[in-house]
Length: 80
Image 1 (cartoon, one colour):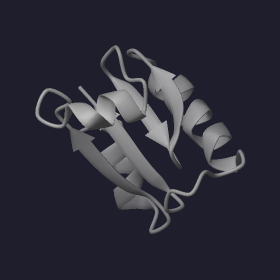
Image 2: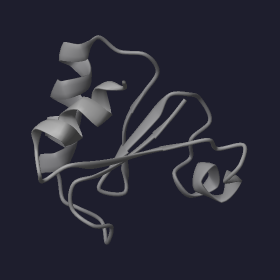
Image 3: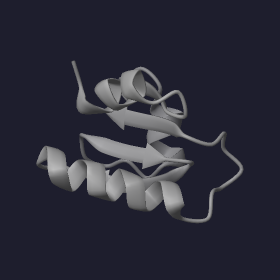
Image 4: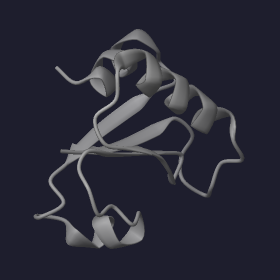
């Protein structure tokens, strides 16, 4: 189970979607996801690449505090 999925289980404010960008390439273009994994929080790229759990959580929390785009609050898009 991915870390983003575990975070979603722990918090009702978080949802997560894991997407195969080869199947939905428009999402790769929209989020400028050139590498996997790419994590998007509230419509903004939060991190790229494999991170430690601590670094992933730190970046996701920081991205969640940033000015949200017009995407629903608390949404993850994680490719890979």
